[in-house]
Amino acid sequence: MKFLCLACDEQMKLEESAPPVDGAGLTATFRCPRCGQGVAMLTNTWETEVVGSLGVKLANGRESRCPMGAMMSGAGAGAAEGAVDAPRGASAGLAWTAGALERLERIPEMVRPMARDGIERFARDRGHGVVDEAVLEAARARLVS
Amino acid sequence: MKTYRDIAGDGGSGIVAQVVAARQSMTRALAGVRHLVAVGSGKGGVGKSTVTLGLARALLAEGRRVAVLDCDLNGPTQAQMAGVSGKPWVPGEEGLELPRGADGLGVISMGSVLAHDAALRFDAISQGDEQVWRGSREMTVLGQLLAGVHWGELDALLLDLPPGAERTVQMAQLFGPRAAFVLVTVPSAVARDVVARSLDALAGDGGGASARVVGYVENMVGYWCRECGAVRPLFPAAEPLPLPLLGSIPFDPDLAADCDRGAVPSLTTPAGTALRAAARRLEDILESSP
Image (cartoon, rainbow over all chains, first blue to last red; front, side):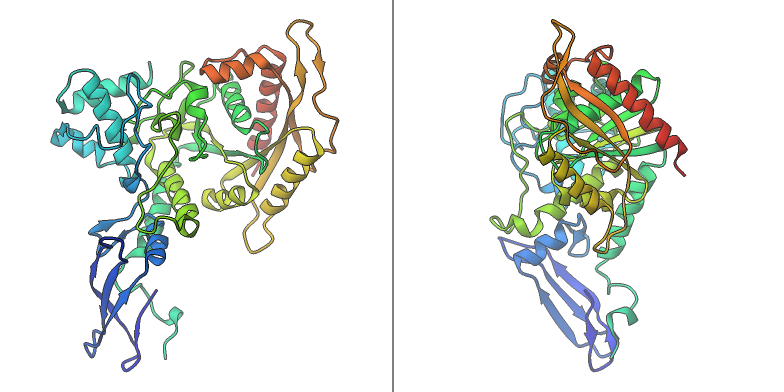
């Protein structure tokens, strides 16, 4: 979607955007770089979801609507050994060292919550209070055993 | 007045650039994969997942480097069948590490991270309107899985597709021209016709590029009785599809039980032997393709 200033025949540039809040859609303002005329684009929820379903960051990259980043129940709930079925987020709360976090951030954003849940469950089951690179290596070793 | 095509760029939203970057990262992640093989059908219940896993294991037995991606996000089966359902997804140096089954087969399946009785749900601001966005979101998940796993060097990555002719075509467009398609059917006229429709859809009329369909596997061609060693018919014979027949696989209750338990089945049974023959034919076709 592009916005054209009719007076100047000039493409308007994204000025500011705000993520969807409380069920409302995305808000984005565009301004003509020549005359300064502005418009606001207000999306409805369908339009917001359709764009968000592409896995892109909206609102100047501040807000992610990536699919699995937004996955709710079921993700990471109970598939790992010894785990009980629990709402997603129940396993949240373990601290991650900078090195471990860096590795987590190397995988696509949408996969992170699922990987994070699984690793935290793995760590908790073995009595670890912090996820560090040694925990990740131990989890990795289990993948091939 | 300028038209859409007169204006370069998207005014700063960066959405197009992000979509392009996502596709490029998928290409990079698959750079070490020699053959991308999508196993689909269009018809549900014909044994796509069992055939996918069987072909993968047959190739593995030939010394090939193989992995499986379960593309059925809503009905994942590969994690359980391959014995990786209790293994977490681990971030490695170059992406998600591949969980491996007892035989060393790498498998990525939503079944590893979903509870066995949990549905895949997405957070959304338009609850109740999933028909608007869900399909697109699932395709994005799949694209990000393809891009986010450290596949490494593989001879073949097998993609286990969900049922539905329309999903098969959408996935063909996601995977691009690199993917070779294998269709699975059972010898019933009903199944054969659904698979024929998928084949027609993959042929690409309607604006999409044609997908490369290299052959088909006829599954459940009979019931193999371990007691007497005979293969007895399950269905009347159906008209063949206009494709190379890679193999005809008899139904083996022991193979089904192994899949349910996540055990590695024997490849010396009639079903296993047929899968190995099918895998060899598939490999021959792939190797001789341009």
